[in-house]
Structure formats: structure tokens, C-alpha cells
Amino acid sequence: MKLPVVVLVVLVAAFGASLLFWYFAIFQGQAPEAAPPDTAVSPMCSGFAPVPGEISCDETISIAQAKYGGKAQGIIQGSAGFPEKEGAPPAVKSFWRIEILLDSPIQKDQETFNSARLYLDRKTSEELASGYTSRP
Image (cartoon, rainbow, N blue to C red):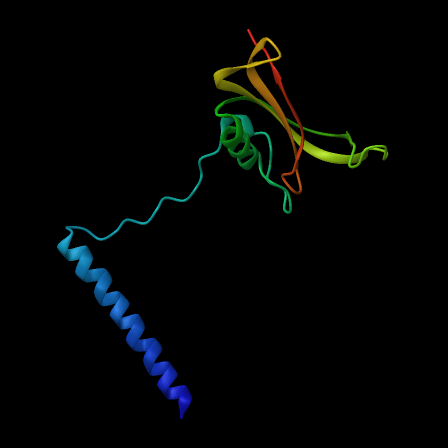
């Protein structure tokens, strides 16, 4: 007895949602447009195919730009040893290295830096290392 009631409630809810959709579409002049598929890929990422279980080149650029504010200047993949704990041997990790030209140079230790370099773990997006540099 409960199953027909549940089915009826779901059907009524779906019908009501469709009525609301068309009501607002007609009175606002147009039906909502479907968002275009996310195909925007940075030209720097064209040589890097997505790998299941790893963050993509585009995700790496987004993370770095959100952290530092600026424009990506270069990105590479690599593997190197990064210390996990002080005194422990370094663990070899696959990384993305990205360089960001900063929107606003920073002053640190009486030097001005206009670029940041960030190493992100390709599997976890964990920041492995970072630093500032100066570019001409």
C-alpha cells in the first residue's frame, strides 16, 4: 500500500517542478539555457592528457592562481623526493610544478619578488614546496 503512495508523491513532485520551470520560463521571456560543456583548457595544458586519480593541469593552474593571484607562466610534471618528516628519508612523489607571475609583487627579506613557484602532489593536490622568484 505504501509503494503506490510513494510513486504518486514522486510523480506529483516531478509534475509540479516542471510546471514551475515553464511558468518562470514563459514569464521571464525565455527558457533557461543549458550551460556549455566545460571545455576551456589552458593552452599550457594541451600537452598533458588527464590521468585518472590525479589532478589535472587545469586544476593545478586554478589552485595556484587562487593561492597567489596572478597568471600562470609555465607548468611541468616531474618526480622527486620530498621529505615527509624531519629526519626521515625523502619520499618520491609525482608533482606538478607551476610558476605564477604575481599580480602584485611581494616584499620579503628586503627583496621584491614578482613570481611564485609551487609544487603540488599530482595525486592529492597537497602542496609539497613553494617559493618566490624574480623574473625579468
